[in-house]
Amino acid sequence: MKASTPLAQDELISIILPVYNEEENIPQLSEEIFSTMESGNWRFEVIWVDDRSRDNSYALLKELAEQDSRNRVFKLSRNMGQTQAIAAGLSKAKGGIIVFLDADLQNPPQEIKKLLQELDKGYDIVTGWRTQRQDGLLMRRLPSICANFLISKMMGYRVHDYGCALKAYRREYLNDIQFLGDTHRLLLAYAVMNGARIKEIPVDHRPRTAGQSKYGLERTYKVLVDLFVMRFFASYSTRPAHFFGTFGLFLLGIAGVLMGFVVVRKLLGGIWMSPMLIIACTAFFSGFNILVLSLAVEVLYRGILRNNNRTTFTLDEEDSVDTSQ
Image 1: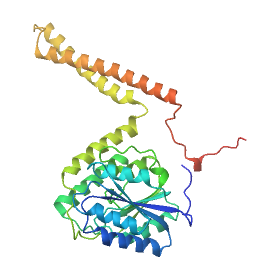
Image 2: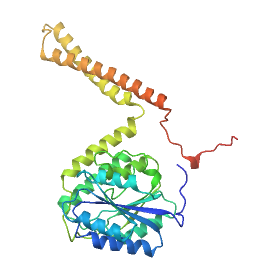
Image 3: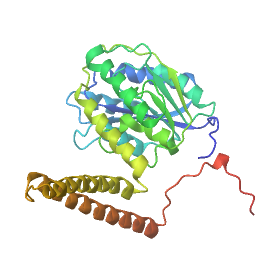
Image 4: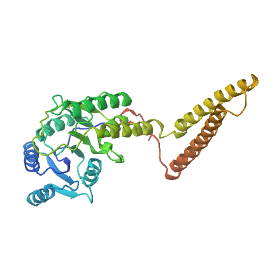
C-alpha cells in the first residue's frame, strides 16, 4: 500500500451514521456534527442510513436533508442490521475519508476533530478508545473486554477497543471488504491484516440519555463466529487444501490407530466386528472424503484465479524498489 499523505485542503469527508429508532437524539446529533465540521473548515457530507426505524427517525432525517444538502438520507428496504446499514452508507459515500459514528450520542461528534487531526499526520486509520466507558459492566463492558482480548490475540495486534464505533478510515482500506454477518465490528481487524497504519486515541464517552441500546450479550457469539471466519480466510484463503487436508489427515490418523488396535485385539483372540472397527471405518472414509474435497476446492480456487487473472498478494509500494524503465 502506498504511503499515506496528509489530508488535502479540499478532501471530502463522509460521515456515515446507521440509524435505528433514534428520534430523540437526531436533532442534537446533527447540530453537534455540523458545528464540529464547520469549525474545522472541512468539506463534508453526512450520510444517514435508516434501518427501517419504527419511530419518527426517518421523518426527522428527511427534514434535515431538505434544510441542508450536505445531509444525504437513505432507507433500507427492511430492517437488516448495522452491518448492512454501514455497507449501504459506504456505497453512497463520495469522500476519500470515511468517518463512522453511532447515532446514540454516546460518542461526542466533537471527537471527530481529534481523529482527523491524527489522520492528517499520515495514518491510514484512527480509532477511538473509550477509556472511561459509560456503559453497564455486565451487559456491555465485560463482553467487550473479552472480545477485545480474543481479537487482539487472534490478529496479533493489540487494540484496546475494537468495538468503539468512532473511527476514521482512508477509503482504500474499505473498498474490498464484503459486508456479511457482523463484519462492521471487525473492520479494524481487516485493516490490520492489510497492513494499515493505525493510531488509537482516547475519546470521550457519554452515558446514553435517550433511546435504548440495540446491543446485548447475544452479539458476543456473533462476533466470535465472524472472527473465526475472518481468521480462516486470512490464513487459508490462498491455500484451502491445507486447512481441509489437515483435518482429513487427522481423521485418517485416528482411523489408523483404531484399526491397529482392532488388529492387535484380533491377534490376541478377539473378534473383528466391534464398535471400535465401525468407528475406525467411519473415520477412514470421512478423512478420505475430506481429502478429496480439499483437492477439489484447491483446483476450483486455482482455476478461478487463473481465469480472472487475479493475484493472491498485495505489495507494499513504499518498501518496493524497481529501477526498471
